[in-house]
Length: 152
Image (cartoon, rainbow, N blue to C red; front, side, top):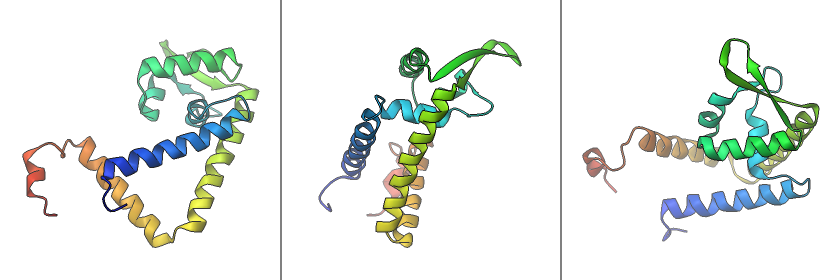
């Protein structure tokens, strides 16, 4: 692994995780994207449609397609936001809550398997590295003169 770039390792690892989740979801005629969306919707209060995209890190057009499919499948329903007449709240149906519970179980099993196989100190380091990567990206510190001062 030492000869591979960090972005390569991140990408291939994420693709493996995505494939694993999609294989699990396909057993129930679903997708990882649907499961992720189900987990991002508040099961009791609903979630404003406008906050769902940023919460999930998705573009509005991609999310719109997923929500339309989920609504067609009876997983969600859209209702006017009583606090903002222009907005819409996304609620899980009973079927959506059932599928959400399944998705949550799959995520927890994945996390449990990783925790059983990776020592705590390595997981802590992993989280710290991920936080640093996210900070560098979100604060636009990668492609600036500031980065030139980093010593390797």
